[in-house]
Amino acid sequence: MTTNPKISIVSPVYRAENIVEKLVAEIQKAMQLMQVSYEIILVDDRSPDNSWEKMKEISKQNLNVKSIRLSRNFGQHPAIIAGLSKAQGEWVVVMDCDLQDQPKEIIKLYQKAQDGYQVVLAKRVQRHDTFLKKLSSKVFSKAYSFFTDTTYDNEVANFGIYHKKVVQSILNIGDTIKFFPLFVKYVGYHSTSIEVEHANRESGTTSYSFSKLLSLAFNTIISFSNKPLKLFVKFGMLVSFLSFLVGCYYIYEAINHKIAVLGFTSIIVSIWFLSGIIITTIGITGIYIGKIFDQTKNRPVFIIDEIHG
Image (cartoon, rainbow, N blue to C red):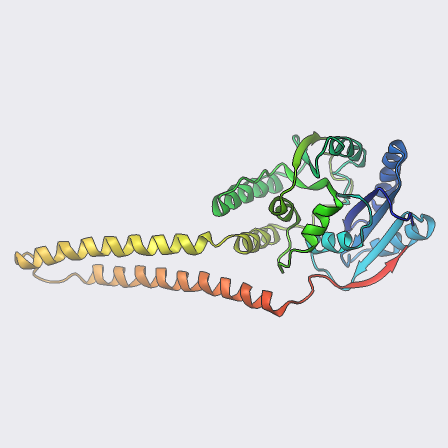
């Protein structure tokens, strides 16, 4: 293992037994062209295939590769954080293992960082993803931007190069829900983005099902924004105001003896409508309380089982 490497490359590994060797080989080619000291940190998120066996073999054969295995499947973003916690380089590259993030693009990212940037993000202008993944990414970016009153670019993901002080700032964030791209955005620093080549997936399919993407989006928005609560407060005030106007109307009608029999339908509709609002509001509040409960438990977001290399 290189001591005090210039660049650390962190990649979470899941269902990658057929491509992890090629991933390391392509990264090595890029590093040889750059002629800088480096380390490669592979983090096995308890993949159900033989990825870990492949990773151990690679670490035995290559002193620049460190293989880390988590105790269970914690998810992609906790796996990234685990890798960052072991990175020693002045610059840290984060990239997915499926080779859609091209290792050769690291050269462009590093060169751009030398212009005085602490963060250089890879912008995937022509994404080679499935229609569902593109759609879900776009919907998430719009929803996140709306609920947090910020801008989120769905063409930017994990791939990028980050100075060690940016990495340390991210590691200091104590949120139990981890989402690396938003942490990068939160910590700030002098950042930019450049266009990079995005390739087809080398092998297999994405591990993110629609339900997992939906859960990730929901948890991330809840973790980073309290706007849903504010929206329900505004909605409740609007309903109260409309109810006041309707009440004034019926009082006026009653004074003028225009109401003979009160309507059964309007009463039932009002009860169900207001009950739905109340239950939904309580549910949203309960979710936030639940997240607070999870945060106060202060459980580790990842547990390392083994390290090789």
